[in-house]
Image (cartoon, rainbow, N blue to C red; front, side, top):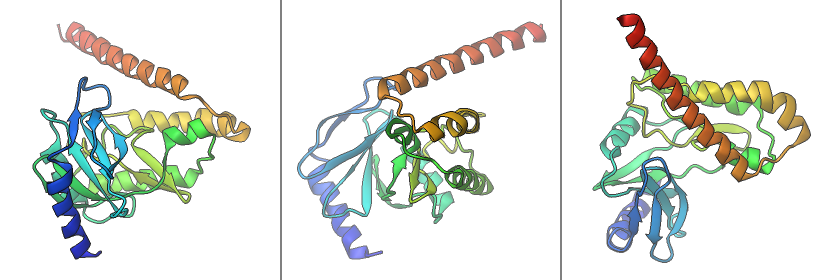
Length: 228
C-alpha cells in the first residue's frame, strides 16, 4: 500500500470533492441522490444513507460519503476497526467528517449477476458464509446482507456493505437469499441462463420488504395477544 498516494487522495477529497459535492437522501428506503459530482470523480454506487465514488487517478480506493443528516458513520468506522484485514471485506484507510476512504472491491453484485444471467458458483455463497462467520467472531452481527451488498469476483464471494453490522436485531435476509439460491436459482435460473430485468427484481425487492414489515407487525400483535 502506497501511503503517499493515499495522502494525496485524502488531500484531493478535502480540497476538490467534499466542498463541491451535492448529495441528499430524500427517503431512507431509497438510494441517495447525487445532484452534483465534480469532474473527474465517478459514481460507483449509492445506498440508502451514503454514496460511493472514486477518482480515476486513484483506482484502488473509493470514498464513501454519508448524506447530511443520515446516521451510521461512526458505527461503520467501528465495524471496520473490528474487521481488520480479511479478503472478503474492504478496509478503512481514513475516516473523518462523514466520509471514509476504503479499499476498492471489484466484482459484480449478485443482484446484477441475476439480471445479466451470469453463473453464480456455490463457492461464492460459501465464501460469504465464511466471511460472515468471521465477522461474528469479531463481535459483530451481520445485518442487511442481500443481493446488492454482496459481490462475485473471479468466482469468489465478497461482502460490500458492513455498515449495519453493529445492529443486534436478528436479520434473515442472507438466509432467505441462500434459500432462493438453492431452491430456485441453481435448479432453474442457472441451467437456463435466465436474465431477469431490473424492474422485475425491484418488484421482488419491494414485495419482500413489505412482507417483512407485515410479518414483524403480525409477530408483535401475536406477542401481545399471548402475553395477555
